[in-house]
Length: 155
Image (cartoon, rainbow, N blue to C red; front, side, top):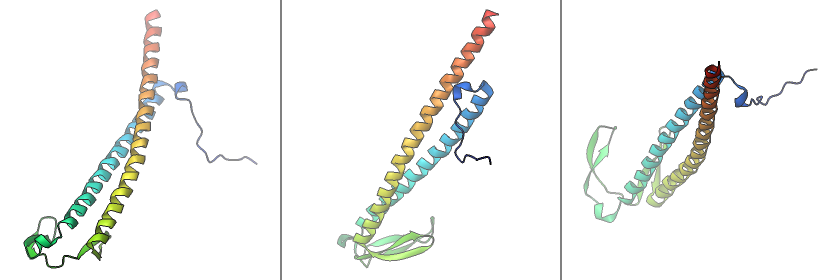
């Protein structure tokens, strides 16, 4: 009975030829691009949640009954007045909105910012490791190209 290994077989990159190394390099570059895009999106989400914390802080006594612009869509606003200084409506995702106190809303958004921060740290470590792998791979490719050039010159 043959056993099949569920773990991927490890290959020493120095044993690969240049075309195989080029393929590994392409895969690493794609992964790096994807990870970098994810990092950027997480940073944007974090900034959005930080802006929400700032906006909740603007719900204060000095702004009661002032005219404000209330967004109906991303580009459509209507005038309104701030009347409830104790509560806000929070978008909790997938089309659900919840009434929360200002303190609860700030806590909600602060938790989101912190969650994203920890994910960003993990993602940044992953990106750094992938970049180091790519740099190592490029060094190997350069060494093999140099070795090929030396062999051709000696002939």
